[in-house]
Amino acid sequence: EDALVVRDLTKRYGETVALDGVDLTVSDGEFVSVVGPSGCGKSTLLRVLSGLEERFDGRAAVDGEDVRDGGSDGVGMVFQEPRLLPWADVSENVAVGLPADVDADDPKAATRIDDLIETVGLSGFEDHRPGGLSGGMAQRVSLARGLAYDPAVLLLDEPFSALDQLTKYEQQDNLLDVWEARETTIVLVTHDIEEAAYLSDRVVVLGGQPGRVVETIDVDVARPRE
Ligand code: ADP
Ligand code: ADP
Image (cartoon, rainbow, N blue to C red; front, top):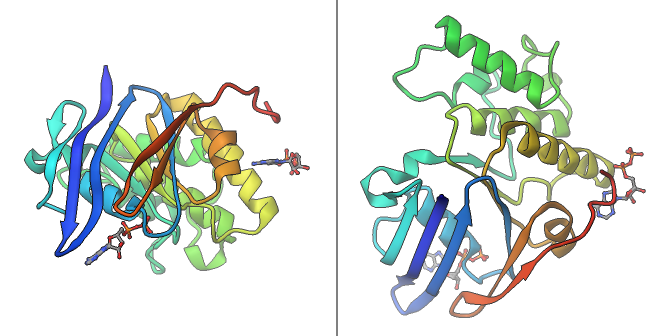
């Protein structure tokens, strides 16, 4: 089963061709990285998948549903900046990621939130506000929020680039733990080829311009820290 299917995706901004005939298939449970230089269309790809771009040529489907017909609801997002609500505590910030029709106080939803907080290693911090958290911890909250919807695909956009080196390594390993524990399908966008090779099963290299897939690398290395 494929969690994500992109076929012949072309996106133009006026004269600029941001993506030119991109094909990408991600199986259920796979961890794929997308790397490439600035301007090769990485953000454009994420915007198409998350439903922020309606006008493009080709096809993009999440869990079998076209992103233009609601398929993008199956996408969870994690950004470089955690973008947490400063006045809300950790549990409430994670609950922001729940579907609109789910009441965060419902016992099942509350249990789900507690489980996610545990998965990202933040048990005991449920009542803390973002202001008292380190950058790495804030990014863990953002990861839990991205998973709250139980997305078919979790998209991460440069999630570690703003972190110091040690925190970055911790967060990379935390992401691997989460991926293994929850059998999530992950697409990670990064400019860091070493990070991509360390974390993912497959690295898709975009080049441009216009942006197209120039290479796909199957990663078959023992993860050094496992
Ligand atoms: P990346 O995320 O890899 O840096 P982008 O997806 O942001 O690349 O950009 C791909 C190309 O599309 C670039 O040439 C960029 O200038 C262009 N582009 C992106 N967004 C817009 C926009 N809203 N209007 C016009 N051009 C855009
Ligand atoms: P610690 O448990 O001491 O915080 P880690 O387990 O995070 O350290 O890392 C162990 C070693 O592996 C570190 O010395 C680091 O240089 C190296 N390392 C960690 N993450 C990566 C990575 N993503 N790519 C390459 N080397 C890494």
